[in-house]
Image (tube, rainbow, N blue to C red; front, side):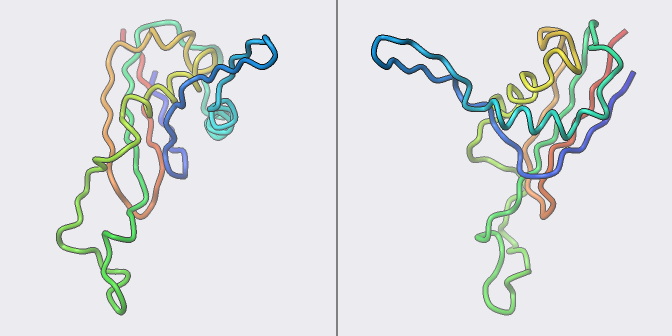
Length: 139
């Protein structure tokens, strides 16, 4: 089985859980909860009938919007500079981007992200920011 998805918008990274202590009451919360819910909503129609429960190969391409510094100025404002790089080499880190997908899809696309045995991921720039995901079951 192969599931291919394309989620529009700049990719999101998983934020670390936070802990608070107010008046002796300890509270843990997930600052990424709303982002994960929104991400899953965009992918929901492509979900399998039941969460996958077998080894999985996951391929992900995180495509970020190019910063203005990659373009010229004035009449060349839409022209890409010759020294503009194609790979996204700044934060967010690729592992946090992947963890965001792992957590977002847990229990819906797969039983648990521990089923992911093979992972291929990259971060690049484009004028069309999005996340491209391919989920493949391994026989």
